Length: 131
Length: 228
Image (cartoon, rainbow over all chains, first blue to last red; front, side, top):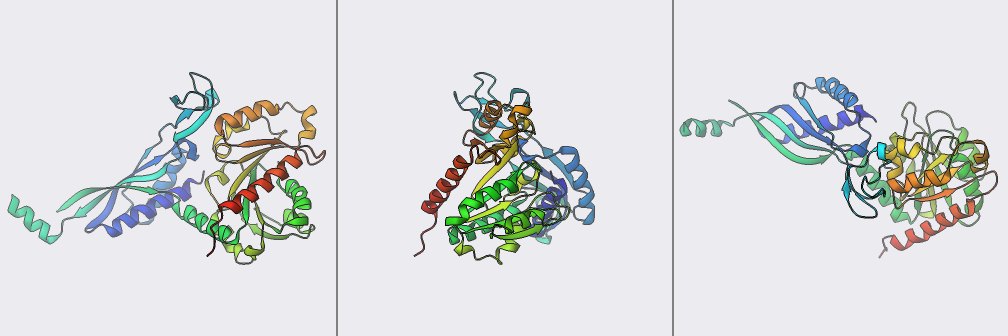
């Protein structure tokens, strides 16, 4: 579902982080979590990301670490925590009742950006002293 | 000397659309109207449902429509014949409406004079689910010719809606569709969704749908911010 739009949004967040981090040179990795109930296709997103990141040399070396956890729901009748899946019509494997509450599965977030930074001059002096 | 640093965060992706949707919603709340986002696969009967609904509603309420189609104004023209204000958004190659497209047409509407604003989304059971527009209620149509297993195949849109309408129920004798089974699939995904079996041809379920619209409107009036 619109993986190019999602990739563009991820890269905007990465670029914004580079801009506001003192000494940041480029992005090394971005960690994204996409829940089961967000219609994201892994291959399409990876393809779109690897294509769009090349438009900016600050992101061209950035690796996408994409985590796609299974959703967790509490079932309607017994509040048992389970992973809702198509094969079981999204129902609880123990009691057969449906989703009472979706605890997780709708995330689409950037949770970490790793940046290459250059130490500030004062920090370099301090590092020399420590050694 | 180069180092690497980890910047831990929790930043929503696609937050631009969500922020714009919230902004649209603020306009709707300030105007005191109820906004409904109608979604379905192509041909499930969104425009026909709107035609039938507006016949009744426009007698007593001020209604307006935002019509989303990739090309053309055929659906908008059908609704304009009822004397209702309709704004057409031609999305081109985009298979869903987004909050920015809706925001652009709002300035042409006298929102504070409206009671209901219907948004007929582009026919698609996938993408509209992920692009809120600022609506108060999401209504998904599933026609009986599409198969009762569609909630299983498209869980996201059915999990996130307020109402599911099983349309074209006059065709039930000719298709292998169980309203009970489809209802069960929906409610196992979404316990808060209300399901109605409707037919524009026979009138089945239309009163229930109109009653739901009326209740939703009255409820929204209680939730509106009070202007001082």
